[in-house]
Amino acid sequence: MTTKAGSRCWAILPAAGVGSRMGGELPKQYMSVAGATLLEHSLGTLLSCEQILGVIVALHADDTRASKMSIFDDPRIQVVAGADQRSGSVLAGVEALLSQAAPCDWVLVHDAARPCLQVHDVMRLIAAVTADEVGGILAEKMVDTVKQASADARVLRTLDRDTLWRAQTPQMFRLGELREALQQTQGMVATDEASAMEMAGYPVQVVAGSAGNLKVTVPSDLPLAEWYLQRHKGVLRRES
Image 1: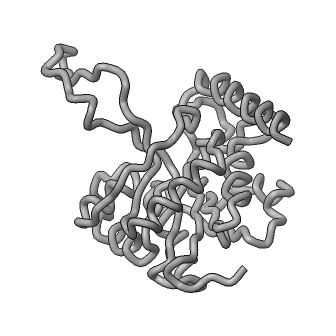
Image 2: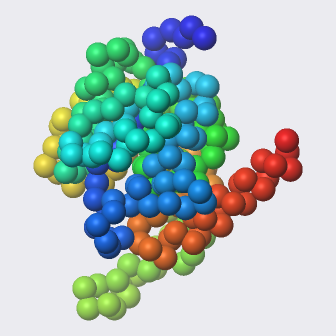
């Protein structure tokens, strides 16, 4: 499939972290759930999207686990050395991509610790962003009543949930604009790519995602992730 610059899509998967909140010595991206590691689930979904031409995986410089996984035999995968902070790993991936892609190409950045991402959600994001020409993120609308509290655990106010969304990944932006935003916000508190883009003055749209696209952060998240993954497998079996 031949695509022109400006319509091509790539992906970056930062996976250089140690997942300290999970406890133990095994980085969380290598924890197994539903028959595979979190990293394999997340990477497999990106590789299943035909619009994504290649995936840059940012790994810790001392990582020896990924090379033993058969999924890394896929020629569309390129490995780069990541950084201590997520933004540094993403920037390393961006720089690697710019050696083979155009600044106007699109790049989707996805968390390795979101193993339940589904192809149809990625496709919805790509369709929305390319149609509007404005970068965007998958996000989930808030349905709970949300309180803002003080440092001493006293409610200050109730926030308007109609305007609140839970940010997810992938987050999709123009490659050159994302590099500019990441460079401008180095040393600032940017918890995701959308934050960096916002601080750099770029508009960001939200695209409705799925509640199942959860991020595995603490051990209690693993059983829920397994439930979603097994459910997805069941749906695929029924549809085939």
